[in-house]
Length: 136
Image (cartoon, rainbow, N blue to C red; front, top):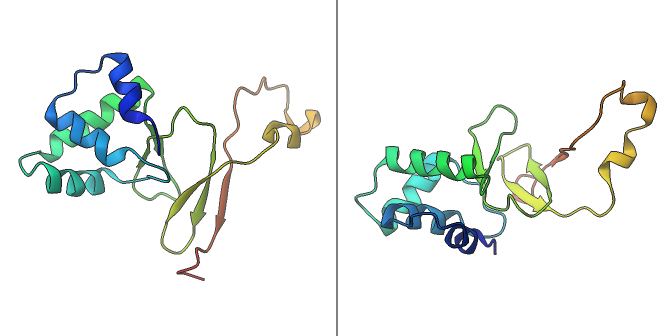
């Protein structure tokens, strides 16, 4: 499970009931929900929470660097609470399911010096694509 709630408490993020519910919905492994999915789950816990409040909380979490936005194939942005744990993503080309994967080794090692074109590379993002068991 991600440690999102612990990180937010440690930062002194004002934990209103609405913010707490958004953080609770996002907290966990392999969580990559859209804003609408976060809202739908949040409403189950706190029926009066508005869509605007969910969007505002998500924006704050991204600005704080506590949640990462993930976009794949032009689909809706998804929110990943594992922003502090290095990982890559495995994406189903059928249904869009996203799973976190923890690859060993340095992905930058696969980029030869001649292919860097003088860039000082500061980061690497790798996305693995395929079909999940349900779509295969």
